[in-house]
Image 1 (tube, helix red, strand yellow):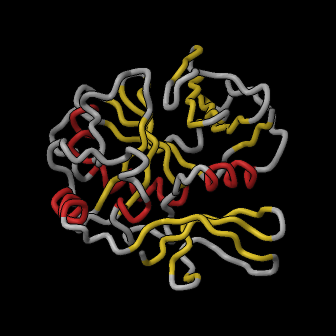
Image 2: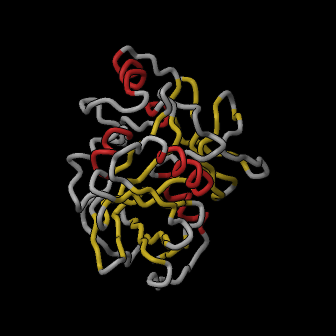
Length: 252
C-alpha cells in the first residue's frame, strides 16, 4: 500500500441551509439528487461554457466539500461567493486546515463502490476508482504517514484519465474537451447552470473538435500544464518510466 500527502489540491467547504440547491444551480452535475454516501466529479463553468474548475464534490457535515486545484481555491471561493446573494450559504477555503492523502495499491481499503464514501468521525474516505482512495479530514486528525511522493498519485490519476483544471488551463475548455461527459461529470438533463446552453449545444450539435487523450513524452522533454504539445495543450503530466505520462487536449 502506498500513501502520498496531496498538496496540489485545495478544498472548499460549502455549508448552510441552501448549500445543496446553490451548488446544483452552479455545477454541471445534479447535486440535488446526490446521495449522502456518494461523491461525484463536476465542473464549474464560465458563462461561455469554459471550465473554471474541475471539482470532486463530497457530501459532508452540514453541506459539501469541493476538492479542486490548490492554485484555484482562493479565487474560486471568492467568485462563487459572488453568486450567493441572499441564499443561506457559506463558502470557506479550508485548504490549510484539512489534510488530503491518496492511498492505493495492495492493502488499500475503503468503500467498495466507485465514488462511494465512508466516514469515521471527521475522517472521510472516498473510493475514486480501482484500488485508489482519497482520505481527508482535519489536519490534526489525519494520521496516515506518507510512504511515497505525490507525483505517483498524479500518475495514477493520469492513467485513470481524470483531469485537473489548474490556473494554467482555467477557462480554456468546455467540459467535453476534457472528457467530463464520458466521466459522468456532466448531467445533460438537469436545469440551468452557468454556460449550460453552450455545453449542451457542443454535445448535441457535434461541435467538440478537440478531446483529451493520454500520451507519453520521452525523457528530457520538460512539459507542464497549459503548455502546447504537438498541436494540443497539456492538462496534466507526471514522471514515468523512460520519460513522462500526460493528459492533453488534442484536435479530433
